[in-house]
Structures are given as structure tokens and as C-alpha cells.
Length: 242
Ligand code: CDP
Image (cartoon, rainbow, N blue to C red):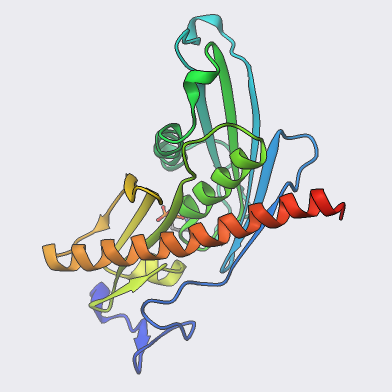
């Protein structure tokens, strides 16, 4: 059976009842780990993700140090128990790729020049996966960096859109990601709407791409609002002493 023949949309609704432009439910918590400089936990639909920031700290081995800026190192890890078929522990091609694109995206907002010769480590741990984990990880990592008090030009906000049964939809869940026609994760610097990550798995026409891209950016802007709200309420908790 061809992918477009698998019924993922029934009577104009998606498998989980969402409209085409609807996000899954998102919950963000700030400062969840006491030993990290900054941390965040995000639940995005069935995704459960923790991000932890350590540093700036001394970088070893020394030859990796850059006298002009800090080295930002993002490590994305899909836990063995996070997916249906147990994943072999340790890095694989997919996690190395996601770590690289996440490091690149976050490096464009962190003021690395303030901390020469050091390293800022960001660990993104996927505890439960249901598609869109790279977006969820980036959103959590941005909030964790802000929680660590690391100077940034803005935060990174991310969301995916894609094509399912010929329709352009926002924020694909696992069945849609695995059985749909295309997934398009996007990450932006919200205030400038500058793109810092754009990947495409599948095929879209030029018009479909434009529509999916605009939908993903709109989703990322909605996530941005939630990231800011989570950060503001965490600061208020400290001030009020909760
Ligand atoms: O999670 P994301 O959409 O950023 O990345 P993906 O490579 O498109 O993976 C989509 C989904 O497939 C993941 O979120 C997992 O739910 C699932 N997956 C899996 O079940 N086993 C793996 N080894 C990798 C991914």
C-alpha cells in the first residue's frame, strides 16, 4: 500500500482528533535539575524531554579551545526505553545528526564570544518519543540556557509541519511522521523570524513547501509564547519565594 493510501485523516480530523493547524498539548517546566546550571522539562503530546546545561566551564582537551568564543556542545540522546522497539544505547547516525543541527541552531543565539576558551554543554535527553523530538529538544534547551543565565540574543523556538494524506498539517505525531508523506521541522529566532534549522524528510511541491513552512513558523511562534511564559513564571516563583 502506498503511503498516501494509509488513512491518517478521517472526516477532516487527524487520528488524535486535532485540526490541521492544531498543536499537541505542551507543558514546560523550568529548573527541574538541581545540579545543572540550567534545566527544563517539556511535555509535547506524548514526547517527554529534559534539557540540562552545564558551563561555561574549562574545555578539555585544550586543543579544542577557541580563544575567540565558547564551544557549544549539544548532545541529543534517545533513551533506550523512549521508543516502541528498544533503541540500542549510545550514539547512532540519527542522534549525531540531531546533536549537530541542534548545536548549530543554538550557537546562533548564545553570545559565545563572552566566554572564550570554555565549553557550554547541553544535554537533551528524550525520555519518551512520539515524533518532533528534535523540536521539543531545541525548545527545552533554549529555556534551559535562559534558566542558566547564559547571555543570548533571543531564544530558539521550533516546530514541525508536514504532509499527511495530501494535507499540510502542523506538528506531526509518530503515526503521521512515520506513515505520512513529509515532515518539515523548522527552528527560528522568533524576533527576527530568522531560520536556524530547516530539514525536510519527504517530498513537497513548491506551493506545499511554502504552506508547510509558514505553518511551522506559526507553530514555533506559539511555542515561543509558551517558553516566555514558563520563564517568567519561574522567575516570579523565585521572587515570590514559592
Ligand atoms: O523525533 P523527530 O521527529 O525529531 O525525529 P525522526 O527521526 O523523524 O523520528 C520520528 C519518531 O520516530 C521519533 O520521535 C520516535 O518516536 C520514532 N523513532 C523510533 O521509534 N525509533 C528510533 N530509533 C528513532 C525514532
